[in-house]
Length: 95
Image (tube, rainbow, N blue to C red; front, side):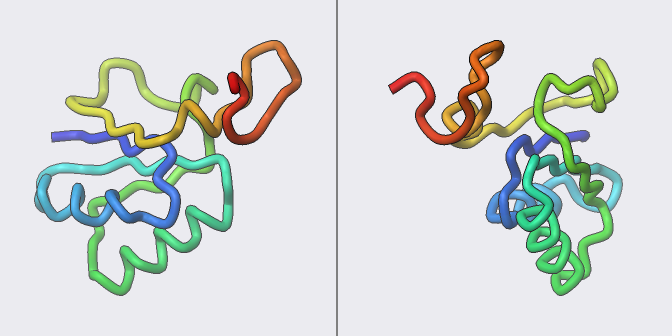
């Protein structure tokens, strides 16, 4: 199984996902923040998980393979994404 963890942050869900898909599966963890990806990578290394691919990107930026993922996990990602075409970024852009 191939799982996308969009907006993975420090890997709170990434690591359990990687454990669940097992050595024949893969988790692709993406985040727009380099620091969050670094934290997730460090946690994955400490847990000896090698089935995680890390990418610094956001959803919809065209850097992910089409029709590759069996499941996708997004937790509070949309509230932290830029509002398309508005120039507004950050939390709760629609508030």
